[in-house]
Length: 238
Image (cartoon, rainbow, N blue to C red; front, side, top):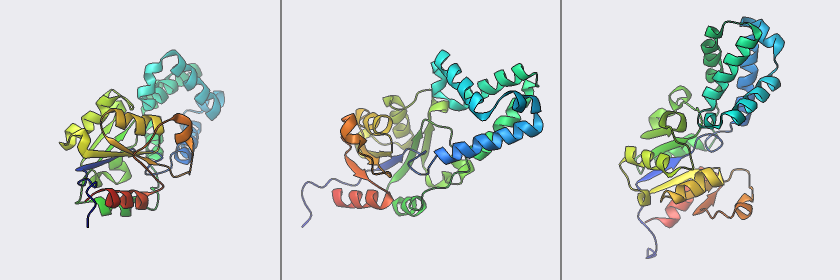
C-alpha cells in the first residue's frame, strides 16, 4: 500500500552547476594556466610584470574596492586584465582575446560520472533547470539540451541566495516554488537560498562534509550523487 504521506512528484528539479554537476577548482586552475600561457605568447610585457598569483591578488583587491563585481567574476577578471595590460603598456584591446581563451578553458569541465545518466533518468519525468552564480555555459559544455531553463547571476543581475533568481528560473519553467526541488552543493547559497524562496532543497554533499551541523541549515534531503537523488525522489513521491 502506498504511504499516505508521499507527495506527488515535483514538476521541476533545478540544479546548481559548479561543484554540483562537475568539480570546478581544478578547471579554474587549468584555465588560469592556459590564460597565462596565452599572455606570455601574445602580450609578453604582462606576463613579465605579473604572475598568476599577483593577478589573482590584484583581482581580490579590486573586488574589495568594488564588491559589486561579486555578481560577475568574469567581469572582475576582465577589469583586472584591463588594469594589468595598462600597467604593462600592452594594448588593452587584446583583453577580449585573452578572455576568450580563459572562458574556453573555464568551460572545459568534466561532469561527474553520475550526471549524464542521472539527467537522462529524470528526462521526461520532470522539467530540468539550472541556476548558477558562475559563468558556466551549458551550450559550450554540451549539456544545454538537457535543460528546459537556465538562469545565471551575471545575466540576471541578482545572485543566489537572493529569492528572485530562484523565482526567475521557476517562472521560466512555469512552475510554482512548492512544485520544485532545488539541488546544490552550497548550504547557504543553494539549500538555504532555495528554501527561503519556497522550494524544497536537496544538499548534494559529494565530499561527506558535516557542515550542515555547523551552519544550522537543514536540507530536505542530503545525497552524495544522482543515484541518491533519484532514490530520494522515488521514496518520497508517489
